[in-house]
Amino acid sequence: MKVKQISIFLENKKGRLYEALQVLGEANINIRALSIADTAEYGILRLIVSEPDRAKKVLQKVNFVVQENDVIAICVSDQPGGLSHVLNILQQAEMNVEYVYAFVQKKGEKAVVVLRTEKLEPAIKALEKAGIQILKEKEVYCI
Amino acid sequence: MFWNKEIETLSRKKLEELQIDRLKKTVKKVYDKVPFYKNKFMETGIKPQDIQSLKDVTKLPFTTNDDLRANFPDGLVAVPKGQIIRLHTSSGTTGKPKALFFSKKDVDVAADQMARCLIMSGMTSEDILQNMMTYGLFTGALVMHYGAEKVGCLVIPAGPGNSERQISLMQDFGTTTLHITPSYALYLADIMESMGIDPIKDLKLKRAFVGSEPYTEETRKKIEALYDIDVYNSYGLSEMNGPGVGFECGEKHGMHLWEDNYLVEIIDPQTLLPVKEEGQVGELVLTSLNREAMPLLRYRTRDITSIIPGKCPCGRTHRRINRITGRSDDMFIIRGVNVFPQQIERILMSTQRVGKNYQIVLDALDDITVRVEISKDMFDGNMEHLVDLQKEITGKLKAEILVTPKVELLEPGSLPSFEGKAKRVIDKRKL
Ligand SMILES: [Zn+2]
Image (cartoon, rainbow over all chains, first blue to last red; front, side, top):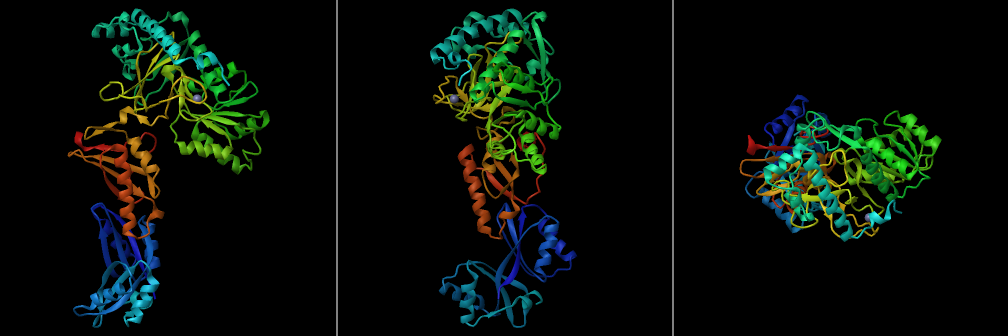
């Protein structure tokens, strides 16, 4: 129940983020969720897209440094405390959360959130046990 | 084994006595015979008799590349023209070449010190040397050739190029020793592989002398492994007879510099004063003590190195210098510290997960930024790993250059790729 995310290394150069998104746009790849982690000198752009494998290829073709990673996508009730409840579950299970970011669009009443923990399998188990809805690849790529 | 055991193992005291004797003669000679030097002495008020000990060498004027060019072609020659028997030139990076003249004795001294080097590496008269350097105006091939003839080994004057002929010469005549550029040595191994020749099994190679272009310790090891041979580092410059000025012994730890023929100084290229302690890095300055046609005082080689303190287990008393780590022209000063781009390059090369391309930016606030490309394979999408890499490089650089740099990680291919002498330092302080 893992979902593919692509991570793109971005150096601190004007327009580089735009270029990456433009490449995907021109290839008709839809971006479902996006997050940027950066320092003053460089950053990582993380994306959930409609076709991760193809996205990786088109980006690499124009010399972006790209890596595919697995992440967890879950549905969280779109109300105060929804996300903190999830994080609490993971904390109880002693799972270290590396990062978390939300989807651009909503799915009905729920918000979709992307999570990456150090170890994915036990985190998935802990979340399932707590009754959190974990999304499958197909569901995520075409939200 | 020694070519001239007495000279090579002369006690330091006797060696220094020999040096001062030869220094005095050299100084007297250039004062009398070379107007350029006489004028320099007059300007500074120095007389030949002011030179009484080796320490007095610092009173003498330097000789630079520019001086050689300004005195082109023969302004620095100290003997009558009839005594000159050979011309070599050294091409600089800019402008006119430098003309270098040899007397009969100079040719012999150059060959003799080359012979010391060859015997030091274990060569004997049974060896077969394939000399794959360019014969011509460049000193490299000819001085090696004469030195090897002195040793009495068979010399194959192959010159460079024509790889298939090179390989068949090796096969037909049982070449044991190569004199070759490092890049050609690497290339030739590829050619052999494509021809189905195993250099280890099918050839009789024992050693190689590589030179005439800079190379790293890694390249040396690579050539050694490819051919299963010993590769010896050497140091030479045409202004000082060509190859064989310094050479490694079997210890392969630094190059013995023939101090009966050269007076060695290491100076701070900024202050032009000798470095404070033996072993400190600086610019190598050489005074020829045994050149007849064209002696040079305190010639600034622009090469950055250091003396290795202490005795060598091989028994030779001539001190050793470390491999050349850069050119003094490349040096820059950041917050009062002398830094060579090569110091930074060495750190980056020794760091996994970064590429070979880099750039150094010095800005108005006297900050230094080192920009380096990450290698494609290192990127795993984890921010922490990038931060760790950045910290690792910053820490190593700080330990080396004593200033904390800003380290930027770049995408592979984003820096202009350089060939040869690269312009890697961008000094915005001068703009
Ligand atoms: Zn030695």
